[in-house]
Length: 391
Length: 197
Image (tube, rainbow over all chains, first blue to last red; front, side, top):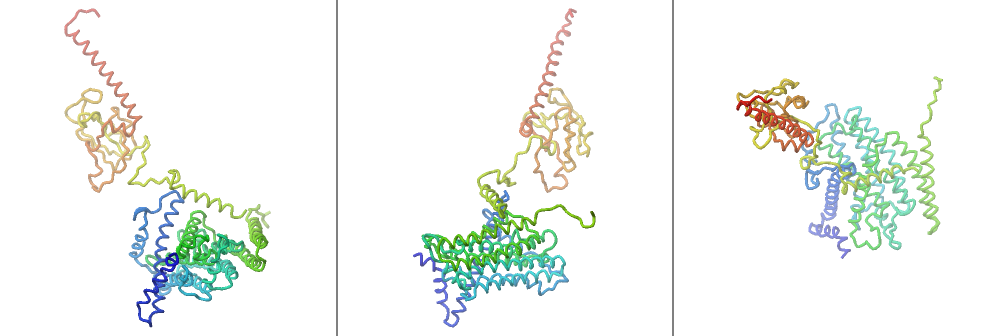
């Protein structure tokens, strides 16, 4: 019974495909999966916009939007209608083709990342042997589209904003990938399906998720911070927030293209959280051994909703980082910790099972964190200013 | 330790989030058209004319002395005296305003008309939901529109209204005492009593 509920979408797809002529079947199967993914994640985007506004509102001691439907849940409909009916303005000096293509490339790249995420048991669109590599390649295309947006607008401030955004995203790619490599090392494969399967066992009631090991926990935290920076979300939303003060790379976009940018960024955020869930939180596996009767796709989406709630919580709490603070954080703090984490993973792999490897790896994770934190914080203390020539 | 501040901040926002569902202090929004905050007693917006009793024509305290018209800085009050007299708040027969218009779009709510009125006839109202779509006469209020009962005055400014009532009652008592004294004296002089004074 639990088995049937778990595989219901797979069975549904097989039934639908069975009604088509034999020649078209492979293509049709893929098309159905793609349509399903698009529908699910687009509606998740709509739901997230409302949840975010209401969540941020409650954190800030106010109601969120509550006029449009009961408790404001039809707000995305109102937003969609608004963005569709706005006039599409393209600056006269702008490069029209690139200006048009930038949001399209963003959305394409963002949606293509979902191809390698296993949403449930036997529910992955493309079981690539190098799934993680494909994922990071697709996420890098998102950065290109942001630069396209800033460049094509023919606006100094847009270009500056785009430069900063690209600098931020490139700097945070490094700890992101280094953190994911630890999971790949532990699973021994770049295929996302294999990585999830390696986390599917249970010891007692606890699962074999990578996040429950010292190196996995550090890797997960690094991965999530880097994801927040990659998706330009608060506290790393300097490229977006700049739009409020001067122009950002968004400025010359209005109406539907702006909505596409918004969509692309959120979809990218979901996809990266999805990868984080796959690599560290066990993908579609249940958290406790007696909960495996709940269908796998429900666990995946529960974890995804949890990650979205974390993003909203962090957004409501932390102030924005300045550009130099952001870059320092990536290169001076996260990169050394990510490298040390790689070594820790190797140590974990080669020490014998038992309490010793837990202690050693925990020390190897915690001590660099404390020392590095203390060391960097020293540099931030304000000292008395000394003048070379004026004394 | 690094990250301690962030953790404290996260705890505070979580407290705000969950607290906003249970405590009024954490969700102070008043959803305007459906709920309204009560106004403080000293709030003021535009003037109104007070009347005692149920009939606004008979009970109006205003005696058309035109002091408020002369003192009003933007000159938004327009008064025309009546030809006949009617008893005022303390019982004396006085003129009353045949026309009393205030142009509320000109009025600046300075309260000078209230301060100078010797008859406690004009007071400040607190009502602010006054939008109209009639751009010519919608904000030019006449006598009837401006009249509110004394009960209404007690409703919006209780302390002030109680003081005003006390003062008026005192004056009325004085006037009545004088009238009684005059009535008592008159029969003696009419009957031409002898001169034991």
